[in-house]
Amino acid sequence: MLKRMFAPLLALKGNPRYAVFTEPLWGIPWNLYAPFFTLFMFSLGLGDADIGVLLTVGLVIQMIAGIFGGVLADKFGRRKTNIIWDNLAWTVPCLVWAFAQDFRWFLVAAAFNALWPIGANAWECLLVEDAEPKNITQIYNWIYVGGVLAAFMAPISALLIRDFDFIMVMRVLFIFSAVLMASKFAIHIYFATETGQGVIRMKETASTPIWELIVQYKSVLWQIFSTPATLRVLLLMIFLQIQHLVAGSFFPLLVTQDLGLPVYRLAWFTVLRGGVMLIFFLLLQRVLNRFSIYWVMIVGLVLYIGAYILLIFTPVGFLLPLLVFTVVDASAAALFMPRRDTLVFNNVDPAERSRIRSMMTVIVLGAASPFGIIIGRISEYNRQIPFIVAIGLFVVIGIIVLIERWKNNASDGSATA
Image 1 (cartoon, rainbow, N blue to C red):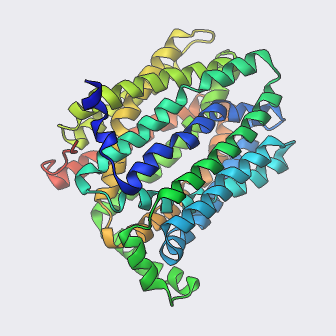
Image 2: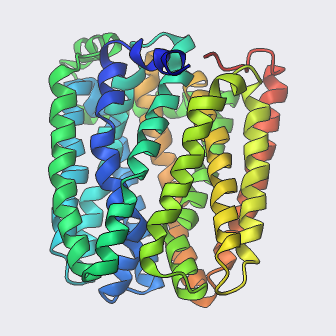
């Protein structure tokens, strides 16, 4: 049973193998501090509106960084681009957060952290460009498994926060995170090789200045907006990005400040979420892969909506509804997110994947950037309203998925194991 379960993981070769196997070195530290990050800022005097400003500033810089993501990956190769910019986007801000005192420190860290699209674009190319198309969903599945397993480290933070000073514990966790993340980037790049498409693009762009490569994005923009399937995926990504602002940044404030949950218990929700997703990824995903990705995504969206409705109507001081919310929300993510990644991959021209994915990231971040400030202001007024907005976004995303299914007749939409 276990041998069959882990056979696809052990069968991974080359860049996908090294990317998947080193991912916990990023996922473990991230899961140690992420559940408490918003509250860390709150504890150092930042309000909902300040956090919203940081989100918008980050998104604007991410948008600018996204412009250079594809260019740098093509010009200097996926490996070199990944090692340099992932360290700037993760190792450096972790060190800044470790010594943060006020809003200004978080602003500097947000600026560095917002450079992640450059490294992420190169990393995703390393992950999938040399993989067989039939294995793409499986590769993304194992990336999610690695992240889920890392989530089981979160109780360590909870125990430390329960017994020691919250701010001191967070500072130590950020230093630890900087060390592990830097190690992950170094190990991955040592074993990784440049992708076939990366070698081609480096040769094609060797004599072309960076500014000229950026100007060439005009043709990429035209390709995105003139290709209906790519345009639909772009809209889906925009709405998901806005929803992520709500769930990722304001859920901790809602459940601790409004619903009375002790801060240290946030980590246990991370573990519960990880356990549910692990069940899906290890036991159910191969069965689900037999069905149309579109219908599995729709089921996931229905679960998302149900979970958010439950959260909105959760009474103060009641733990059980929050536990149910976590289980349903995790189930929805396990159904939806790997297939979202597959959908994006399948609707992008392979020859221009780096530049198209980079420009799509720019457009997504640009469209979502105003919502950081907007959601922050709304959250100061009522922390439930952003989650009501998220429900509406899920409905729109569902419509896009149904249109995509209709356009493709669902016959080619089954994911392969």
